[in-house]
Image 1 (cartoon, rainbow, N blue to C red):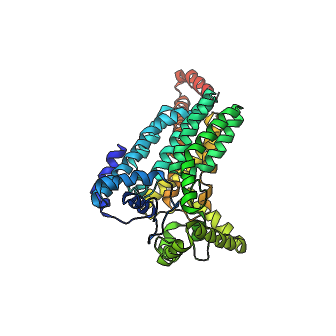
Image 2: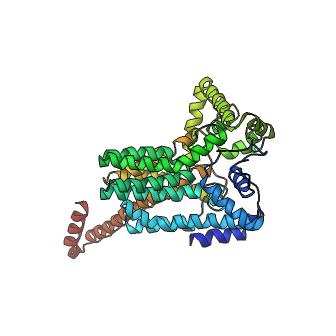
Image 3: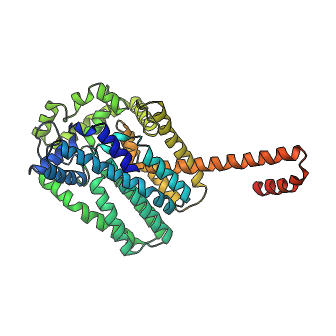
Length: 421
């Protein structure tokens, strides 16, 4: 269902005719042309670590096989639809692993499949958000399964390390969460060999990327190099907390080397690492001299991350707020169950969004954890519906008792007493 809905919309809306290229696609084009992992901006700036390596490598193969025009764009978007569909299809199974009921998982999976609320993020393939969401879904299930089974052996650590290492090559944003969940696993399992095996495996998988960055860029970068650029872009006198507003205000044309040729020339002349260090220093200086404004922007970004402002219509906005609001409330309700999954889910909700509170926020930034908030929202919704149903039955029985249906009295007392217990 998820694939059919999204593929039909992609084809019907002719979305594949839009050939605008962003950093990730430009790197993939450079790879396909034999120029190496390079040139993410408006000019040829040389080797880069601006984006994680996983998805551009896949995308470069599409460009090699189908060219760089509309056919390749259609394949790219259909692949994005397929990755999103796989994520939706796995939600019921993962919900069961986390401890939720079958009906909760099926409700969340159906909701996710039929409502592409973040349609561009899910279908354009311009970003790695689809892969991040799928990786996080599988990693969450694997972690909870391990905690529940108590298997903290060396071999289990190798499996975990392999899963996290591959995922980090696609989505560097998962790095803080990996560290926190690794610490949680060590605390829960009391097994040093589990942690050593996991760290060694992740290190081995990330080492080729880090060595390549040292050779090409002169710095051991194990994730991405663009932190300074993003912080400067999002923390200045003109920046808004919302990414679409910054686009309309022309901040990309002013600050970003993807649109600003002068900035791209600076990257070429200084080198990407030095350029980002300078940008980081400028961002740090602005934050230090504007602490109150930075705090206000951070709070605003926090709010927008969870309760986004979108121009897609009232119904879409209400659904997005419902998923976030009921999702967070659902976690509070779920945390009282004492399930093994509670600390894992809590870590995801607390840790994964943290970097997004420091940079401008768009709909795609919270997409990676939306499958989880959908499960939690559906869980709470079903709990509310059950309570309302019970109250409705009790009300009918009490009315019958008041009307003199004495033969119901014993049944009513039994049901009321049982329900109260």
